[in-house]
Image 1 (cartoon, rainbow, N blue to C red):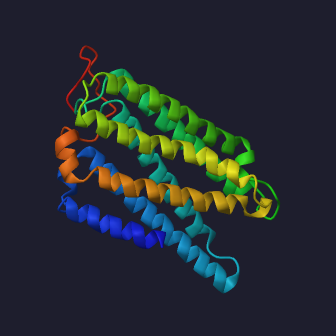
Image 2: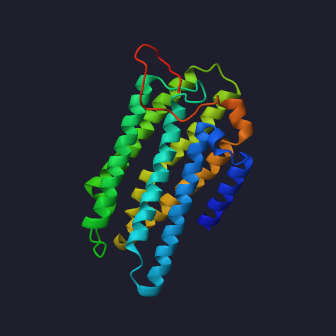
Image 3: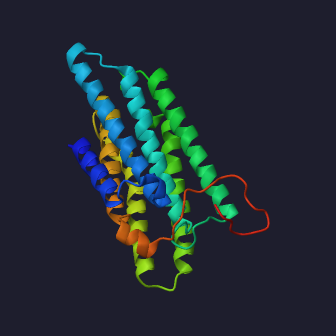
Length: 254
């Protein structure tokens, strides 16, 4: 069901933007990547489950690639929220140098912690035992980073909104902020809920809940980045470049 929803969203998203990916707003390109990554993750997980029903083992390779695709979707979702909270597109088509550094640091930590978590889950955890992946150090780091990203997001969004005098753009950013806050909060909540379940189904339950959370979030995000809203609330911001930052100017052309 989730896969069908994602494929329908991908078609509607592409149709609304006339399938012109190179000419889309930066936030639209990132949203498209999230949709593609989540869809691929669902396809690979379904194939793994199907093979498991046939031989009782499935395909660890397909499952692992599905995990990587899902983590990639979460990375790009996080980047969208952090970029917009710093005024990217809403206030200016560019980012301040110091804001760019902070976002890059958080995203690098996101990659390192999630790779650490996945490697620990693939090679070191005994899935036949009652060990819960989020009770390990990598799991703790992933959840802690989610909370830290929420704090950074809220702080930066508040500063960005304070620069606006009010009106529709401020209300739009508030709606965008509510969506991001729910996404950031629901991951630790899902992990906590899973501790109440049987130890042998905790990891699978969290994985399913995270797919549903991400699928629901990107559904609302697709609605938020419809062309009519982008033209009204966003400037034509391309994807940020993380190099060649001008030392003297607070903003730069990308």
